[in-house]
Length: 283
Image (cartoon, rainbow, N blue to C red; front, side, top):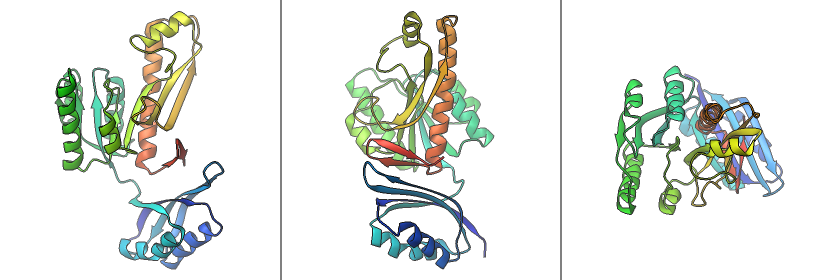
């Protein structure tokens, strides 16, 4: 029988015996644990675990072996295939750096995603998507009616295309609370690290004028509270007085691209688990 390689993740109240029970259930159906990480949160008294398991058992038999343990401990759990590309919708506006990085990494096999569509509120990045043979769809968002129509289209695509993750790759529109709720836990955004200090237009020019010494990027889950969702990944790089605003922009965009791709990859590999307002990352 062909061996299957699965990712298992569990979240439950922290109690004695969880690891023993899970391991016993896996061994009982002939499974071999190839990777294991766990964490007990002292803040929330929750237990988090991520495993990779090889087993010759069929999926139904494997799930049946785990079922008593899952029920006993009241676990939230997920089972997926190692390396399966995650169906991902990307939203953009005019900035190309994050989209280009994601599409390149997808083509190169460095990012475990399948991007069936890029949606935008401007037409500027259509040629970039076409270069990577990814369909591109755009519609202007200029008033409440067009914004609502665009968000309805997002939900249609999520349903029709089996989308598991939506990425805001420098999509410069505030999402409605309704859309944030509908996509809770599967909506990731990226922004520069200057928030909330330097808001609005030209944040890098503002940073240059203030003589900042550190710049970077933050990738986080999107919630109705603007830019305050649980943080997935952050990067930072030192700069100094010799850097021009244009150089700061280039450095910042590079950090944004890498930070976003890393966050998406971790999410695609089921390495990101929520613990209230923060994340547990099993790298």
